[in-house]
Length: 104
Image: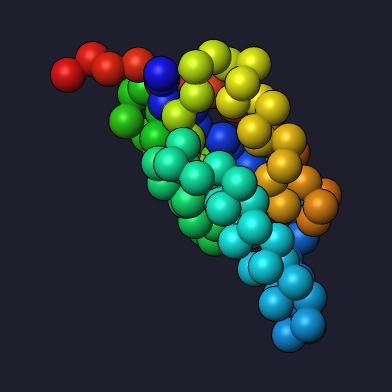
């Protein structure tokens, strides 16, 4: 088993209380489906970000990432299959799945 980071990009936030409740219910259901393979449910990102260049220069902004989750799976394909159930897709976001590896 390896860890996989699901990096969310774009999407919209629910506006009404009813929409927020429905989105949270969808997240809770997806987390339940993942069971013990969910390592970190993650969090959304605020729009505030900074980028640091290889020369140490800092600039405002940095990309379109809007949040993340971390799960375990036996393969990249399995992680992608699990990610397909993520509620962030219902809000118009996309997901990039990255396999991590231990270095320390």
